[in-house]
Length: 391
Image 1: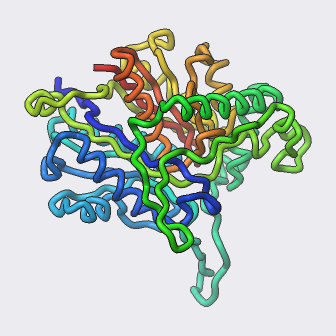
Image 2: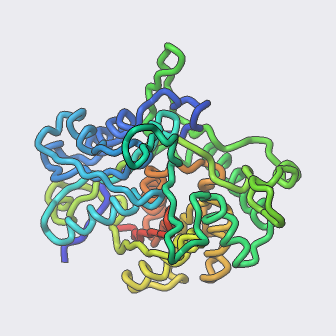
């Protein structure tokens, strides 16, 4: 069977939305940069690629993947927009791998891009179109008649409800978030991300600034500071705070995914091969469970068990999500998010899955072996995951 292998994987550094270094950069500009760099590092020619598949959200519609292809001179390469909220770029990677394993394509760029800082605001109209109703939330409602307990409040659906249902305490969430920041800072200082980051020449207040290091992780934090933060909602027993939640962030990621036959014919050295992928739907009011339930699905598809996995990235949309996964699936927490995740590095929604797989692929290459899983929940009661293995 034809295998889908990753021959390059890049990302921008992650910026803090609205006040960070990428606050004036558009999602399509970040996408153009990483797509071009993924092609360059792949060892292939631009015309070798059959498609560009990028996740996008909160951009008001469109097809940023096609924009990025054109901006890189890839006129003959189409673009596909994917929307599965947080799990979007994991889905992009799965879509690319599926086309390659089927033999329909030989090389595809897949990933995602996100800029909260420059996202447009959506305006709704009344039924007769005569007047504006006002701003809509970035995440549409999921409170259908069948699932009326879900709301447009992602903090409740993702962070708090899973913590409440699974008996995860505020103290556990704070401890996980504190460790996340410690690990992210240690990874940055050790140069863990240097091989995967492409610097952004960012516009900022009339100047151009070279931006090459994730800026969201906090140095000098403490458990005491986290414990002192007020819950985000004034609800009895509410355990989610700004400290044990993911950041609001800007970034882009892109991977060059090709057939193993093409890689061999061109003398390319893959970072990893894509072994399995998948997505699940869960009750919208327990949205965080999607990041847990996607794991058994992809492990089964890969013919693996939890004990076979050497590294895990389980996105910290909220600290409660990876904690639930560790508890329910019997995962060694020391193997989970060893370089930080959403609470520390940040969560640029449509780019996060690609960021996770990029980081894991580079680490597997350095180790010369191993299996890794990236998993995350997604708005609306969804989840996605990807399994990769060192070649």
